[in-house]
Amino acid sequence: MYEFAWRRQLRDLRQPLSPPDELWGSIHARLDALAPLQVAPPAAKAEPPSVRRRRRLGAVGLAASIGLSAAVGWYVLRPAAAPMPVISAVSFVHWKPVDPRLAGATIELDAARMELQQALRQAPDSPALQRLLVRTERQQAQLRRLGREAG
Image (tube, rainbow, N blue to C red):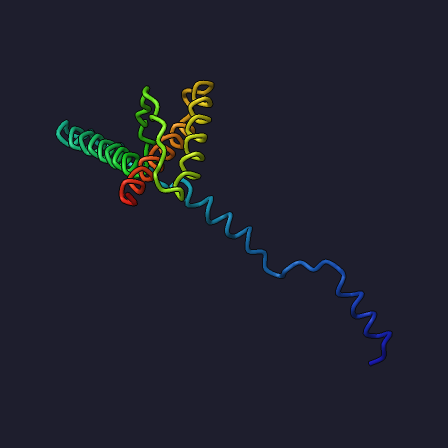
């Protein structure tokens, strides 16, 4: 075959071609014939009250168990509330350690405690400032214990 003959055959393939057997027409005809034979769904039977009561109790029990599991999960996974520190109204008595190595730390912790107390007067509801003050007071108590042990 020559190239021109191939091109002519390709052009002939571009023409629309209908299938020899049309299936959809016969399918629609069969479906239309079956339409009157379809039966309506049976009417819903009335349930006895005991069955309805059991279903209602089951639904209530399911809702209660979901609520209980959600409450337990919330209780277990909730963020721990920061304990409210007890801030003493009486300030620490100025303490001078005997050991000179502890004197610098004592001065720094006293200054930090005083600054934190001033900041707490400006923002008394700040949990971060309260935590820092508690930590500073603990460090001062530890420093005093070290001073007693050093002798």
